[in-house]
Amino acid sequence: MQDEALFPLLSAMAAVYAAEPREEAGRTARLLVEQGPMHLGDRYPNDAVLAEMAAALDASDHPALAAIRAGLHLMPWGDNPVAAQVGAAGDVYVVCTLMGPDGPIPSDDLRMGLFWQRPGTYYPLHAHDADETYVILAGDAEWTAGDDTRLRGAGEAIHHPSLMPHAFHAGDRGFLALWRWSGDVNTHSYTLLPDPKAAVAA
Ligand SMILES: [Fe+2]
Image (cartoon, helix red, strand yellow):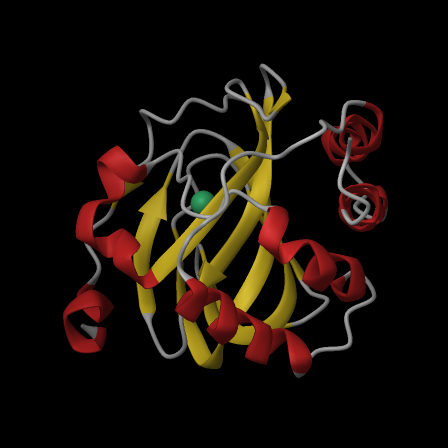
């Protein structure tokens, strides 16, 4: 039986993507509600990270958050599709993947999931072939997308075209975001880039 928190969770995320004016965002929204699985995968065992995340969520009033908070325990936190390339730089965040070639919601040309970056940490410049949109649900970050660096907060959607370098310096509460890939969603092109800010923030 599907957990009673799962459908509201998938529907809340679909509503976020239905508001993004891109064809691939609309397809992602439809897949979430039409192909939603009975289970999303193994649960992430780190209660300390979940507690840290919950504190940030409590400070946000994003409309998707009630359903996401109720379903946080259902998500397969810790499943990072680029774990092999990101190495120690990945210690500052945790990811769950909800859609992609390996599921749990199968798609050959779309990936999506949730991303949590820990308070005050820096995720250095990186890039990949896929087009990407992040939607911040809670917390904030000084966000670099190409030549544009500025503070981004809950409710903001940031689009990275293919190969655009991006980096995030999380605020004091950290931040929770939805991430979505489309186009060429291969993971082998994911690359960490030279970043002078990385040494300062480390
Ligand atoms: Fe990215």
